Length: 323
Image (cartoon, rainbow, N blue to C red; front, side, top):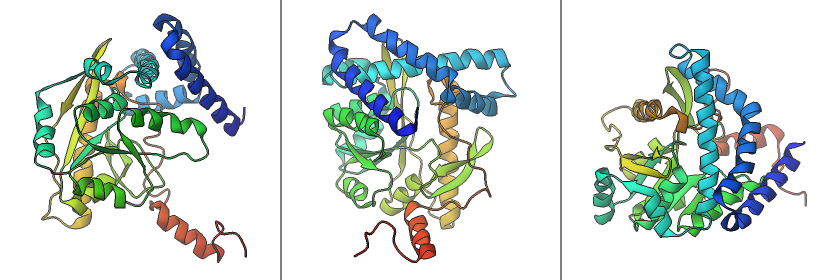
């Protein structure tokens, strides 16, 4: 099956499941999700997750232990889709019951009450969509930065769910004007920044002991706004609920050289993400790319600069129609 067709099929399946979910008993709904998770486990996603687990834990866990962990990873993935289907129909009361806030939420409450913008950094750990919805239903206003897939009709599914719960989605490669406006107006801006994104400006910093291409956007926003990064996670602590917690803020060191300060902040952020993942490794998205790009293999450039270079090499802009 070609990739465009696979994307259309996936989009139709998601739309069909979303419409049918309120009328299907939960055990019955779990049957197609279990089948899909099994196929993913045996396919490319499973192979990539296995390789990432081996890179991260290969010297700590035996092959049998890695296999058991891999099974738990895809079991959690099945749970996520089940919860996102519910999130597409349920209201604020359901979200509030599902996500417990621990006392550390006061760190964000103080900033929001003072009218200061808040940069929230998190990862693909636990249930990050419930995290955004829970903060929105607490009264926080703002947006999350997410990837835009113009040629993938299924990619609009999660932004639609976020809108239902009052969360705006900004494209990763969009001009930063809107993100800065949200922060300057005292809003909350969430960034999923634990995975490799080749088309954005990035820095190679350690992650599980290996250089990992890490997006520079959190450090750039911290510098532009003089705001710290607030690490927030929403992880499952039983089969029915999650706990949302806020770690102490990460500050950009102003006394350092700009490049050194950026690298230092991203290194500390990755170290914290790694500590989170080690506590609940089955809840992280191991099937995603994290160590695909190695230092020296390619020049890391933000998308606008790559486009400018391509235009210069061609001598014209291929996006413009001839007159």
